[in-house]
Image (cartoon, rainbow, N blue to C red):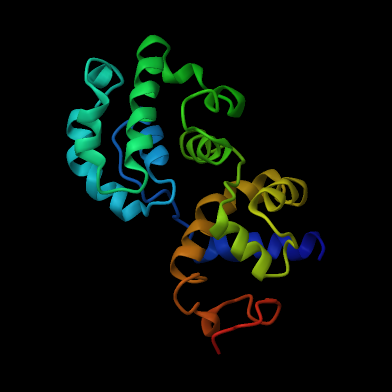
Length: 210
Protein backbone atom coordinates (compact mmCIF):
# COMPACT_ATOMS: atom_id res chain seq x y z
CA UNK A 1 0.00 0.00 0.00
CA UNK A 2 1.27 3.46 -0.89
CA UNK A 3 0.03 7.04 -1.07
CA UNK A 4 -1.26 6.50 -4.61
CA UNK A 5 -3.41 3.57 -3.45
CA UNK A 6 -4.81 5.55 -0.53
CA UNK A 7 -5.64 8.53 -2.70
CA UNK A 8 -7.30 6.21 -5.23
CA UNK A 9 -9.45 4.66 -2.50
CA UNK A 10 -10.50 8.06 -1.16
CA UNK A 11 -11.13 9.60 -4.59
CA UNK A 12 -13.13 6.60 -5.83
CA UNK A 13 -15.50 6.62 -2.87
CA UNK A 14 -15.92 10.37 -3.15
CA UNK A 15 -16.80 9.97 -6.84
CA UNK A 16 -19.33 7.26 -5.97
CA UNK A 17 -21.01 9.53 -3.41
CA UNK A 18 -20.08 13.13 -4.35
CA UNK A 19 -22.97 14.67 -2.43
CA UNK A 20 -22.66 12.45 0.61
CA UNK A 21 -23.89 13.88 3.89
CA UNK A 22 -25.32 12.62 7.15
CA UNK A 23 -28.68 10.90 6.83
CA UNK A 24 -29.71 11.98 10.31
CA UNK A 25 -32.46 14.58 10.23
CA UNK A 26 -32.24 17.69 12.42
CA UNK A 27 -32.93 21.43 12.33
CA UNK A 28 -30.09 22.81 14.46
CA UNK A 29 -26.71 21.76 15.87
CA UNK A 30 -28.19 20.89 19.24
CA UNK A 31 -30.59 18.42 17.66
CA UNK A 32 -27.71 16.97 15.65
CA UNK A 33 -25.63 16.14 18.73
CA UNK A 34 -28.69 14.52 20.30
CA UNK A 35 -29.43 12.57 17.10
CA UNK A 36 -25.84 11.30 16.90
CA UNK A 37 -26.01 10.33 20.57
CA UNK A 38 -29.22 8.40 19.89
CA UNK A 39 -27.79 6.64 16.83
CA UNK A 40 -25.33 4.49 18.78
CA UNK A 41 -26.19 0.87 17.88
CA UNK A 42 -29.37 2.12 16.22
CA UNK A 43 -30.01 2.82 12.55
CA UNK A 44 -30.32 6.39 11.33
CA UNK A 45 -33.65 5.40 9.83
CA UNK A 46 -35.07 4.46 13.24
CA UNK A 47 -33.61 7.56 14.90
CA UNK A 48 -35.21 9.77 12.25
CA UNK A 49 -38.54 8.02 12.73
CA UNK A 50 -38.46 8.71 16.46
CA UNK A 51 -37.22 12.26 16.06
CA UNK A 52 -40.00 13.31 13.72
CA UNK A 53 -42.05 13.51 16.91
CA UNK A 54 -39.35 13.95 19.56
CA UNK A 55 -37.71 16.95 17.90
CA UNK A 56 -40.98 18.84 17.76
CA UNK A 57 -40.59 19.12 21.53
CA UNK A 58 -36.81 18.98 21.88
CA UNK A 59 -35.92 22.18 20.04
CA UNK A 60 -33.33 23.45 22.53
CA UNK A 61 -31.59 22.30 25.75
CA UNK A 62 -33.85 24.53 27.82
CA UNK A 63 -36.93 22.74 26.44
CA UNK A 64 -36.17 19.65 28.52
CA UNK A 65 -34.29 20.89 31.57
CA UNK A 66 -37.55 21.08 33.52
CA UNK A 67 -38.77 17.69 32.34
CA UNK A 68 -38.15 14.33 34.00
CA UNK A 69 -36.10 11.60 32.35
CA UNK A 70 -39.25 9.49 32.23
CA UNK A 71 -40.76 11.96 29.76
CA UNK A 72 -37.82 11.55 27.39
CA UNK A 73 -38.11 7.77 27.63
CA UNK A 74 -41.68 7.93 26.36
CA UNK A 75 -40.45 9.51 23.14
CA UNK A 76 -37.41 7.32 22.47
CA UNK A 77 -38.45 3.92 23.88
CA UNK A 78 -38.24 2.22 20.47
CA UNK A 79 -34.48 2.71 20.07
CA UNK A 80 -31.78 0.58 21.64
CA UNK A 81 -30.54 1.43 25.13
CA UNK A 82 -33.25 4.08 25.45
CA UNK A 83 -33.07 4.08 29.24
CA UNK A 84 -29.40 5.08 29.32
CA UNK A 85 -29.81 7.41 26.37
CA UNK A 86 -32.72 9.22 28.03
CA UNK A 87 -30.63 9.84 31.14
CA UNK A 88 -27.72 11.15 29.12
CA UNK A 89 -29.91 13.30 26.86
CA UNK A 90 -31.30 14.92 29.99
CA UNK A 91 -27.85 15.44 31.53
CA UNK A 92 -26.58 16.87 28.24
CA UNK A 93 -29.52 19.28 28.16
CA UNK A 94 -28.67 20.45 31.67
CA UNK A 95 -25.06 21.15 30.70
CA UNK A 96 -25.98 22.89 27.44
CA UNK A 97 -28.60 25.03 29.14
CA UNK A 98 -25.78 26.47 31.24
CA UNK A 99 -23.03 26.52 28.62
CA UNK A 100 -23.67 27.02 24.91
CA UNK A 101 -22.98 24.17 22.52
CA UNK A 102 -20.77 26.49 20.44
CA UNK A 103 -18.16 26.38 23.22
CA UNK A 104 -17.80 22.61 22.76
CA UNK A 105 -15.79 23.01 19.57
CA UNK A 106 -13.07 20.39 20.01
CA UNK A 107 -12.99 16.63 20.47
CA UNK A 108 -11.70 17.04 24.00
CA UNK A 109 -14.49 19.41 25.01
CA UNK A 110 -17.26 17.43 23.33
CA UNK A 111 -16.30 14.18 25.02
CA UNK A 112 -16.98 15.83 28.37
CA UNK A 113 -20.68 15.72 27.53
CA UNK A 114 -22.61 12.69 28.73
CA UNK A 115 -22.52 9.68 26.37
CA UNK A 116 -20.49 11.66 23.81
CA UNK A 117 -17.56 9.43 22.95
CA UNK A 118 -14.78 10.11 20.46
CA UNK A 119 -16.77 8.67 17.54
CA UNK A 120 -19.81 10.83 18.35
CA UNK A 121 -17.63 13.92 18.67
CA UNK A 122 -15.93 13.23 15.34
CA UNK A 123 -19.27 12.80 13.57
CA UNK A 124 -20.57 16.07 15.02
CA UNK A 125 -17.50 18.11 14.06
CA UNK A 126 -17.26 16.53 10.61
CA UNK A 127 -20.86 17.54 9.91
CA UNK A 128 -20.90 21.00 11.49
CA UNK A 129 -17.35 22.15 10.76
CA UNK A 130 -16.24 19.93 7.88
CA UNK A 131 -13.49 18.86 10.26
CA UNK A 132 -11.00 16.25 8.95
CA UNK A 133 -12.22 13.38 11.08
CA UNK A 134 -13.11 9.83 10.16
CA UNK A 135 -15.49 8.32 12.71
CA UNK A 136 -14.43 4.70 12.89
CA UNK A 137 -17.10 2.28 14.10
CA UNK A 138 -17.45 -1.45 13.47
CA UNK A 139 -18.74 -0.77 9.93
CA UNK A 140 -15.93 1.56 8.86
CA UNK A 141 -13.50 -0.86 10.47
CA UNK A 142 -15.03 -3.67 8.41
CA UNK A 143 -14.60 -1.88 5.09
CA UNK A 144 -11.07 -0.67 5.75
CA UNK A 145 -9.93 -4.12 6.84
CA UNK A 146 -11.81 -5.97 4.09
CA UNK A 147 -9.93 -3.92 1.55
CA UNK A 148 -6.18 -3.55 1.37
CA UNK A 149 -6.12 -0.21 3.19
CA UNK A 150 -5.65 -1.16 6.84
CA UNK A 151 -4.82 -4.35 8.70
CA UNK A 152 -6.06 -4.33 12.28
CA UNK A 153 -8.23 -6.29 14.69
CA UNK A 154 -10.32 -3.60 16.38
CA UNK A 155 -12.06 -0.33 15.42
CA UNK A 156 -9.86 1.46 17.94
CA UNK A 157 -6.71 0.21 16.25
CA UNK A 158 -8.14 1.08 12.82
CA UNK A 159 -8.95 4.58 14.03
CA UNK A 160 -5.36 5.20 15.10
CA UNK A 161 -3.93 3.85 11.84
CA UNK A 162 -6.40 5.85 9.72
CA UNK A 163 -5.24 9.10 11.29
CA UNK A 164 -1.68 8.27 10.26
CA UNK A 165 -2.19 7.15 6.66
CA UNK A 166 -4.96 9.46 5.43
CA UNK A 167 -4.37 13.09 4.57
CA UNK A 168 -6.63 15.88 5.82
CA UNK A 169 -8.44 15.91 2.48
CA UNK A 170 -8.75 12.12 2.47
CA UNK A 171 -10.47 12.28 5.85
CA UNK A 172 -12.87 15.01 4.73
CA UNK A 173 -13.76 13.09 1.56
CA UNK A 174 -14.13 9.76 3.30
CA UNK A 175 -16.20 10.67 6.35
CA UNK A 176 -19.61 10.63 4.66
CA UNK A 177 -18.81 8.65 1.50
CA UNK A 178 -17.38 5.71 3.47
CA UNK A 179 -20.52 5.56 5.61
CA UNK A 180 -22.74 5.37 2.55
CA UNK A 181 -20.43 2.79 1.00
CA UNK A 182 -20.74 0.35 3.91
CA UNK A 183 -24.42 1.08 4.32
CA UNK A 184 -25.45 0.46 0.70
CA UNK A 185 -22.59 -1.43 -0.92
CA UNK A 186 -20.26 -3.26 1.44
CA UNK A 187 -22.88 -4.49 3.91
CA UNK A 188 -22.22 -6.80 6.83
CA UNK A 189 -25.42 -8.78 7.40
CA UNK A 190 -26.53 -9.02 3.77
CA UNK A 191 -24.44 -10.13 0.81
CA UNK A 192 -22.14 -7.24 -0.18
CA UNK A 193 -22.32 -5.98 -3.76
CA UNK A 194 -18.91 -7.34 -4.69
CA UNK A 195 -19.65 -7.67 -8.41
CA UNK A 196 -19.95 -3.90 -8.81
CA UNK A 197 -17.30 -2.96 -6.30
CA UNK A 198 -14.47 -0.82 -7.75
CA UNK A 199 -12.08 -2.41 -5.25
CA UNK A 200 -12.91 -6.05 -6.07
CA UNK A 201 -9.49 -6.98 -7.43
CA UNK A 202 -7.62 -5.65 -4.41
CA UNK A 203 -10.18 -6.54 -1.76
CA UNK A 204 -8.94 -9.16 0.69
CA UNK A 205 -12.40 -10.27 1.82
CA UNK A 206 -12.36 -14.06 1.47
CA UNK A 207 -16.16 -14.48 1.22
CA UNK A 208 -16.69 -12.25 -1.79
CA UNK A 209 -20.16 -12.42 -3.28
CA UNK A 210 -19.20 -13.17 -6.87
